[in-house]
Amino acid sequence: MSIISNAYSGEQFMNSRLMISAITTVVGLTFSTASLAWLEEGGERDEALTLKPDHENGIEVYEVCAGCHLTEGWGKPDGTFPQLAGQHPEVLVKQLADIREGNRDNPTMYPFAIPESIGGAQALADVVHYTAKLPMNPENGKGEWAEGTPEFDQGKKLYKDNCVECHGENGEGKADKFYPLIQGQHYKYMMRQFEWIRDGKRRNANPDMVKQIKSFTDKDMQMVINYVSRIPVPKEKLAPSKDWLNPDYD
Ligand code: HEC
Ligand code: HEC
Image 1 (tube, helix red, strand yellow):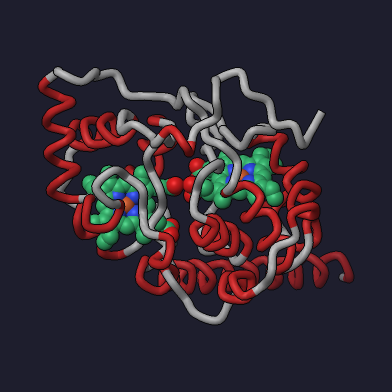
Image 2 (cartoon, rainbow, N blue to C red):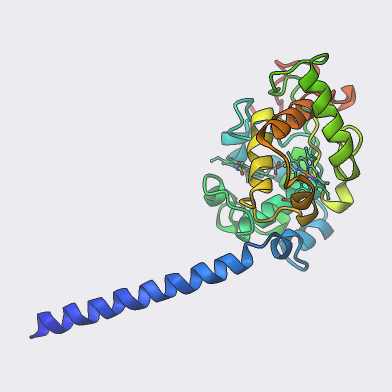
């Protein structure tokens, strides 16, 4: 008798679990519209941007990040990890806060980026100011079409017509608007993000960018990102050589 009633309540439990997960799915869908998640006010991002960064603590916090983004902050040309060096601190803070608040999915990084691992808004301010100032990788991963090919030219045209307004003439972005610097970023990383933004998978995307690129074919996407990956980065933002090692770590 007791076995039966246990089994019965077990089934009820299952049902309520299913119902909760059905409800969460619906709520999840509602929140996955880009406009809601793009730039909510009053979160950790806004708080971190008002704090005075501590350089030494930035070095300390970045140590855990270096495990994936590398000590130099250069990420990997194979696209697994983005370059962080040289990115606007505002953009880095936004992405970190979005990842921490669940507005951008990043299951690989999530456990290393939460307050329990690195601390609160002050840690965000410290680590982003440190990484933003690192010199950039002189040899970022590039697409397959060199300057002079028709695909390069077509990519350049697509860029001028669709991207300059936000990412700037040379992919330098706009810090105060949270538009990322994309010059010098790895081709394969950008391909993944661009596709996720186009297809609605990156939930914190800017809704106007989504609109702008929604008719891009896969070939358009390859050509425009190929062009972006080949925009020269100003010399003063680059490390002196590809063999440069970050002296803050040994
Ligand atoms: C276990 C590996 C791992 C660790 C550790 C890690 N990250 Fe990441 N990070 C990633 C991956 C993977 C991505 C790209 C995810 C994607 O493709 O959407 C990423 C993306 C980011 C981005 C977004 C970049 C952009 O251009 O939008 C920022 C900012 C970032 N990481 C900062 C950090 C900081 C700061 C730390 C340390 C506190 C850290 N990461 C630790 C794996 C990691
Ligand atoms: C209306 C402004 C706007 C336009 C137009 C736009 N973007 Fe973006 N783009 C953004 C913003 C804002 C983000 C960051 C969104 C976020 O906070 O997650 C972004 C993100 C990206 C990323 C991911 C960067 C990273 O570090 O993760 C790439 C790559 C990119 N854009 C390329 C392009 C290209 C190429 C075009 C033109 C075909 C374009 N964008 C047009 C605003 C724009």
